Length: 348
Image (cartoon, rainbow, N blue to C red; front, side, top):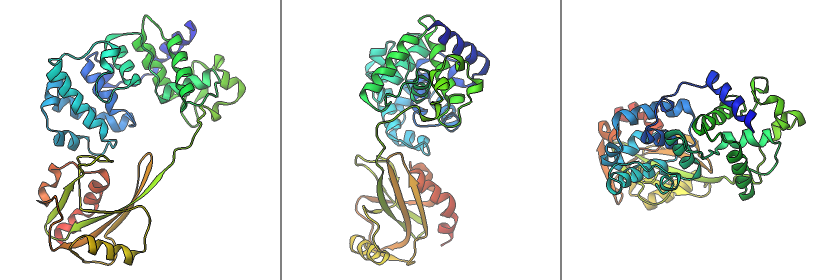
């Protein structure tokens, strides 16, 4: 047990990446980094972290921003419920806790959008409390180190690996221990082609001895992917017609072009006919202006953009000038479309 933590901490001191949230014990900054980095690579999340900490240097600054502004800054990161929860929790800290960030695992976990992992990370990194973090990197390191085939996506797996992690944690230096095991999983004990020769735990790693590295960690079930077909209607005028997604679904409270959605891929003539029945529009082309497959964790969205002329604005939609579209938070798939086709639309 002692060798494990000493080995990974020594390795960490020599090999750790220099990241701004590692040079502070400000719980607000650490919380912000943890929420930003959920489901996000460090290199992708870093510029967002720098932007957020510059724009909102305190939790009260974040609380006083509008949700639309926060979502706009989050644009491109995906999993937008993280941004909404972050903003709601900042308001809670500002109003209910008088800007005082909670200091215990139990109190931190009460914040909206914070689970066991995030509460453990904040409480150990900010307050050096002995709570073990168990994220994807830690699951991978521990399942291989102990050669344990318990599925990590099962209730039993979460219990088993959380117990391993808590038993191994260095009670004197929990912050460095947690960061070390996470960094080892990120840089060395990677999902594919792990660099076992560079691993400080190679001699005692049971999966390395058993040659089972490449089959661990184990999972019990395969994620079912849902297919959705989005048909966006793009106004051919110099203005954009947009609507707010104010229902509980992906991209909630973000803006999009008027949408016609199906669960199946219907013939094109049927799609055009149904859209005309649902919206008072004329199609300028019988082919989509742009098509793209947008992949989310549990959904594949087949997206088509149609150039149309609106006779009447759809219900609950608004019209904005092309130069004002950047004021509205947009799903990444629409933002990319505008990056690629925006100049064409403005000239049309």
